[in-house]
Image (tube, rainbow, N blue to C red; front, side, top):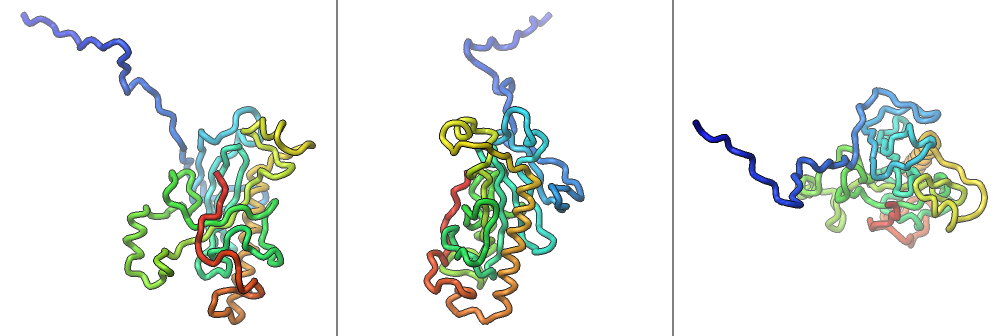
Length: 252
């Protein structure tokens, strides 16, 4: 009769990896054909919960996703809502290289054009595929950096060695009077006095759609007039601060 073998004795302090739970960094939600955000109905391309950015406590954010991406039907622009580390929501609109403001940094947009949302544009940058996918300010179906570089290697629409990609303009609801659900210190100690309002996803979606409409109106106007060879559209300063793509965002 063979002697039964015992499982190997585990050393003190040795914890099996299989016993350590790993919290998911994001959870994709099954896409409905139609999603109502405030007064707007969209056809979502992506809806996600992001546990690391989800605020604690009760509030409107409890029933909100943390990331929603869609293509605006009226303008054709890609739109995105993404929650920030402080729990506030931020909105973004991506325009193509034919847009007269493509490549402009956030502080280079002439105020006379009226291109703004919420408390102002505070983000302007190219698609960034280097961040984790659930935090990228970029198209939902953006290719990886290696695939992207391979696909553009022989394309004629390159400028100074840079790939032609979407340029994103964005805003964050963390300004004066905005409530930050994940940062009580900022709300109570180091910000302005007075009541603060949480800008919910319906409000942010409305501001995103308005921003897309303003950007589209400018693009349509520019296409109906002779744009100088320099690429400076309409009545913009002939020496703008930013005509080349540089990282201009401050969002986290």
